[in-house]
Image 1 (tube, helix red, strand yellow):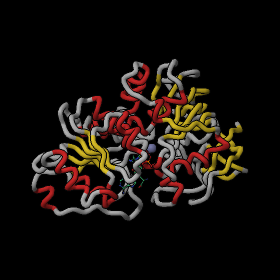
Image 2 (tube, rainbow, N blue to C red):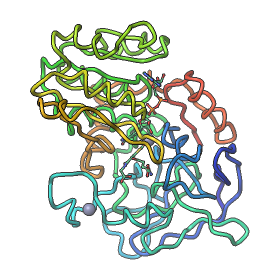
Image 3 (cartoon, rainbow, N blue to C red):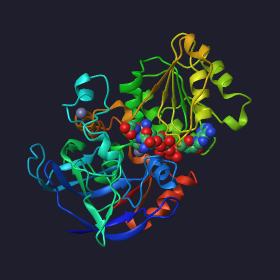
Image 4 (cartoon, rainbow, N blue to C red):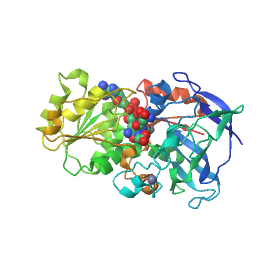
Length: 368
Ligand SMILES: NC(=O)c1ccc[n+]([C@@H]2O[C@H](COP(=O)([O-])OP(=O)(O)OC[C@H]3O[C@@H](n4cnc5c(N)ncnc54)[C@H](O)[C@@H]3O)[C@@H](O)[C@H]2O)c1
Ligand SMILES: N[C@@H](CCC(=O)N[C@@H](CSCO)C(=O)NCC(=O)O)C(=O)O
Ligand SMILES: [Zn+2]
Ligand SMILES: [Zn+2]
């Protein structure tokens, strides 16, 4: 079939709206009509050329929601008409990683996904006979996409696509990092570095679990108002203090119990670790840093009880947890609407990237 997509021909260049050829679903695959997709900082990271796994031409996008149009042979858990959220972290429930119960990082299709291919090592997308790569196994910047069955969460049919698409990455990543990765307890003091589409969801998660002080740190003062609305109790602008680490330590009487880095800046990752409490502080890295970047600190920071952890997709097991998070939204337990600051048609997708780069949007959502 033919469909429309925003194609990334090469790094650093704007996306180009094209008619692309899309082959139907093969065994274990599902054809999905994408109804809406958010634009995440990670799409920009890959488009910028900083991603070692970035390959071109590709159809980016990993924060979508849509409807099943067709299923390939052997697909047992989904049927035409089902509402779904594509998962860049699948959940096969059979691989060593899934069975370990220790991680959400299902590895069943990770190798081919990282090469922009479906599990049988081919692409379903092409233009004028030349293959176009998939991205993160989802490619939601296309009106139609083909996704493995194990990488789709079935969601309730009354959930609005233009809001719950954000659960496909940002909402789950932020709230999940608090609940599933750090397991923040009521009364804990939390520091959140970077108050964008991810950090604001960390704040929302910290508020949900009953954290005490929730300290937000951002160089963009315009982020303060929204962050307070979501539960931030204190704000630090790094440009206005001598030392961010000292500022957090002072505010918390010794250091944050948990900190979250939601920027992708390795200098800030160090600050986030070092502002946590001696003996038990945990710092969770969420931000994605460019190829070749490395983190450093004095080993003494770890010897004295601080811990560094990372979190991908908030530690969520997508097929199990995403439908629950959709329920939280539908039950009014989490706020997504206020974080979606801009809605655009596909033709304006590059404007969405510009809004993000200028710090003007929290989430821009493309509605097909
Ligand atoms: N681990 C995961 O599963 C996962 C999932 C989604 C996104 N990410 C990553 O998380 C990061 C944040 O994504 P986002 O969509 O929220 O981005 P965003 O652009 O919406 O937000 C980033 C925020 O950081 C602030 N910032 C930039 N430099 C800063 C500094 N030096 N000190 C303090 N604040 C600073 C910006 O002003 C902005 O508010 C990105 O690196 C993205 O790739 C990771
Ligand atoms: N390809 C990148 C890795 C980027 C990365 O860390 N991605 C996160 C999700 S970001 C969503 O916005 C992730 O899930 N990582 C685990 C994984 O990719 O298996 C690089 O190589 O730097
Ligand atoms: Zn993302
Ligand atoms: Zn698995």
